[in-house]
Amino acid sequence: MPQPKKFKHDVRHSSGKAKVPASLNSLDHAGSSDQENDSGEVFQLSEVNLSTTPLSDQHLKILLKHVLVGCTLLVFKGSRPNEAGSEKEQRLAEVLSVRTTISPNQPEFYVHYCGFNKRLDEWVHYSKLDITKPIQYPKGVKNPLGGVEGSRTMDSKDLHDPAHKNSTARSARIRNGLHVSDSPSVRKKDQLDGSYWDSDEERKDHEPIRSSGSMTQNIHEISRVKNLSRVQIGQYEVEPWYFSPYPPEFSDSSLVYICEFCLCAYHKEICFRRHRSKCKLRHPPGKEIYRNKDISFFELDGRIQKPYCRWLGLLSKLFLDHKTLYYDMDPFLFYVMTQNDEYGCHILGYFSKEKESLENYNLACILTLPQHQRKGYGRLLIQFSYELSKIEKKNGSPEKPLSDLGLLSYRAYWSEAIVDYLLSLKRMDDRSAASVEQIAAATAITPLDIVHTLNTLGALKYYRNEFVLHLSDAIIEGFIRTSKKHRHVIDPSCIQWTPYSASTNQPRYIN
Image (cartoon, rainbow, N blue to C red; front, side):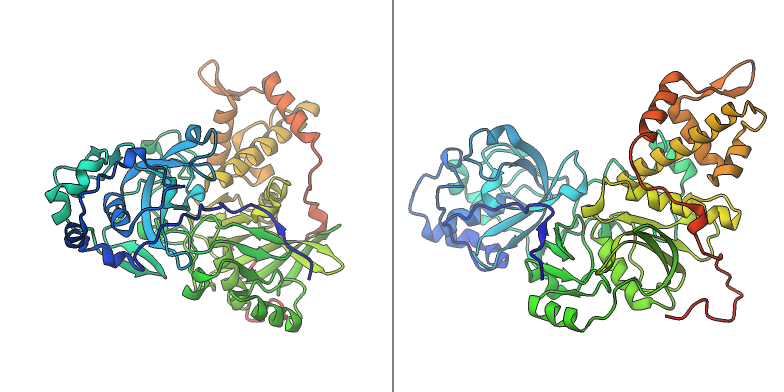
């Protein structure tokens, strides 16, 4: 088996010499032990470098009492705090969870960097926390030092404060193998919610909360921490972005192995090697509906290929935050894009759609695996979904809200498709078909998406009591520059597909 490529280097944690209690539960009543073991030593935290100075159990207990779930403080982004220039890489972060590692037995904090996407959330060693600066406690959470919530800097006086010694840290419990506080997280939602409306009020007016499809509405699902460190897919090692409900034993493994043909996951290498010696699958277990050069698309029915679709849902949840993982795959069709070679068909990405969508959505989830992003495959998936809509003779739109990366991809595709159609009319000197309805009929894009794209481009002008379309030189030059890039394009003549019909009694295909 070839040596896997490391797609993304994992963060190296500094290994201090300090020893901490085996469980955070031992910190609940540490005040009395602090008083008994108090030797009158003055401990000035502002003068301590946590990356080089070993802390006693007593001092670590006090440190962990200050840093609670929901606190906001500065975190070093360098590999070690004492590195040159690392102070310039401090970021404000909110603590979402606390745990103790098995080996070495030291505390780690799961932090969200304020103002950054959730995919950058990570577990950090306690030495990366800058506890010499003010710590902001969340509203409704009592300051462990006594007093009101708000900013507070730790100093040596706190070690001998009776109010501090009599205070108790909040109890912790184990969720999915991780030590997490019982109190709910006060984490704010991401600013990039995937919608393309200019304001929150406009988004709320046009995009009400959905109770069907694949959009998640569970805030506790969104705020859960990542449970896998790294996954190996074929020859790539990838760092997950979000939480995915894999079995609990997978959380303790430093590397999870995923078969790139059947998507079965294993947390032990010996089990994975045994599976690879027996797995005979070399392509997704569905009907191949498109092949052009080395790119293929396979259609899978969630009712027929249920095991594969469930594994695909678990894999995609590692990189999608705004979607709900459904174990009932029957209402969905999956279209998996692969790259073919002599060894088989290797998955690049996929999109799914509901068999019967009341809102006429032509896409529910879309994902290009991180190791294949920035290669034009995302646009290829979007174009293929609209080519299917053209065969169905329907206008389609993706399910809202879109992720931040999905929003950028769709904006780029809509702009190129609309400008290309308008320039073709200009070449034919036919301006009678330059209307939103005619553009929708030619591109299968919904009129609402077309109007939004034209507004974004600045091509929709109000002239003499009516709206007109105007393509500026900058828009045309940008389109020409983008068209010169070498990219994959869907050839509609290579599609061999018939629309899904719920009234069909016979199976659509046999594996």
